[in-house]
Amino acid sequence: MAKPPPNDIHQFSLLSAFHAGLKEGGPPAAFLATQGTHGLGISEDDEADMLQLDSECYTFSDEGEAARADPEDQMPFVMVTAFQPAARVKPPRGTTSATIREVFEGKAGKNTPLPFRLGY
Image (cartoon, rainbow, N blue to C red):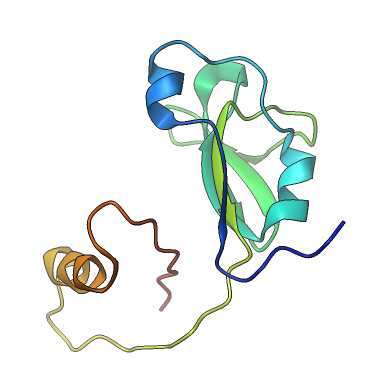
């Protein structure tokens, strides 16, 4: 299988479809690493949130408990990318989430997915 292009987003289904009741099936967690290194989604089991970081999938319960996702867990909604930073920026002191949102919306637009990673 060909390596996915950097920062392209691989998406399975739509969040609105999940909320409309399409909550079964989808790619297994083990497959997601073939599509990218970082992602977000929702697990079929218990409707837990899923986070993929550095090719490892984790699920989060409603109580906030994190666990590695089972490789067979299916994700009825998921978005993953082969994350490749194009720039590194250290925000000035006092930067707020609203300021960060303005920067990203100005670069890509409100409805354009844009992968980014916040670190410390």
